[in-house]
Image 1 (cartoon, helix red, strand yellow):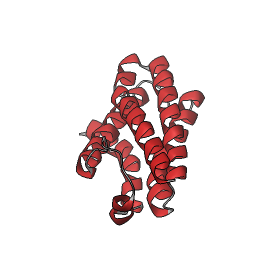
Image 2: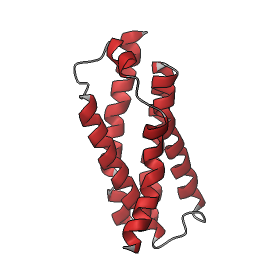
Image 3: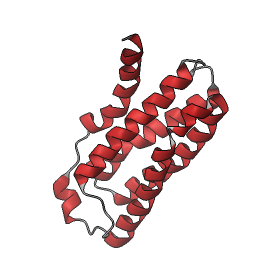
Length: 151
């Protein structure tokens, strides 16, 4: 029970962005979107799964290391977290596909570094981040395409 509670505590901050900043579907629907855009319900489900996987990775690392003392890991994690969480604000609240693209780029790059830093600390924990990287590549291409198609 204590393990599950710790995992939930790690997961909660990853869910905050979606709770604080709402997706503006009216704005999203007026944009020109490429044909490979996934339906919003699937995107929501994918993000939930990805956030759970990220949380499992952090949980596994935190069981063997103090993540606050692992400076490289901690700084990359914070950078990734902030870029990830600010996307909804930048893209939907500010209605800026350009800012959304910049945040997506930062999220992609920092997710790769997060994988590398995680692998140094716990190889098995880093494997949970592979779907995150794959989805971030998709999100990067999608974000760039939306920006180009609309501006």
